[in-house]
Amino acid sequence: MHYLTATISLVNLALSVILLSIYAKIYRSSKAIFAVSLIFFAGLLMLHNIIAIYAYFAMASLYVEELITFFIVIHIAELVGLLVLLKVTL
Image 1 (cartoon, helix red, strand yellow):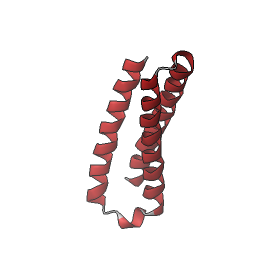
Image 2 (cartoon, helix red, strand yellow):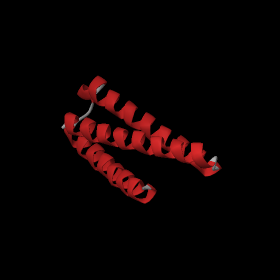
Image 3 (cartoon, one colour):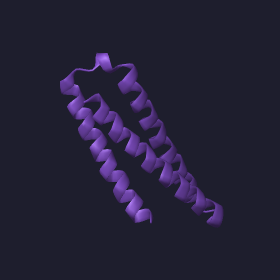
Image 4 (tube, helix red, strand yellow):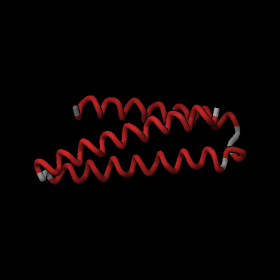
């Protein structure tokens, strides 16, 4: 189950990188200040997922299986949100 959670976090990380790249292009072309906040937001999502992936492998023995189910649901909700945000952004 730890691998499933880490895999979903890895997909979320990839989507965050894509969004960060898009927002950086928007900022370079328009100098719109709102793009800076979107870059910051995407960067924090990247950091969150990097920490999550590391934690699942470094502290796997500390998590009980029942807790992993909740982590999976949380990361799937984040995945859905990132996919909607990516669709709206494109």
